[in-house]
Image 1 (cartoon, helix red, strand yellow):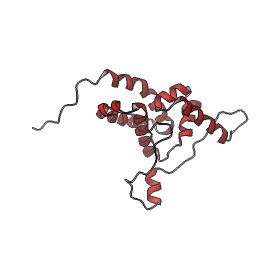
Image 2 (tube, one colour):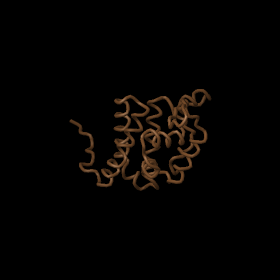
Image 3 (cartoon, one colour):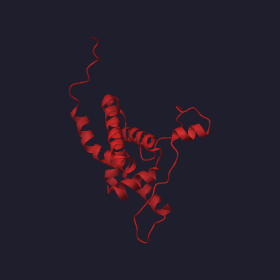
Length: 167
């Protein structure tokens, strides 16, 4: 009988703190774009990935930015649409009611970047009613669909880092 190598029995306290801080917002974000079961799977997948790479993640410049990039990629694949950084910030702020500082913490962005994205979104948004804070998603093809349309192989992701994260 061959046994798989055992995963560490206890993850560090820092991982659990990261999980407790980020999971609610990541799950809310996924629920805004996916069916409940799909959202649960996406968040579970993300934290399995984070846990499996925890040493590398925490040794990087910004663990929140790394995890956010992974999460938005998974949600985009599952939903079939990729949101812009301004749309992400607006979803968090207007629909999920997170503050600028909370959005910055979850995404690994600077608060000034989040503020700028929200201002840009407000300038380009067309309200549905007078005084409405409503917004709508602009459906954009996923990177795989864009690559296929351009005749590039599916694995060749040439997108730049998500503007809500620090590269």
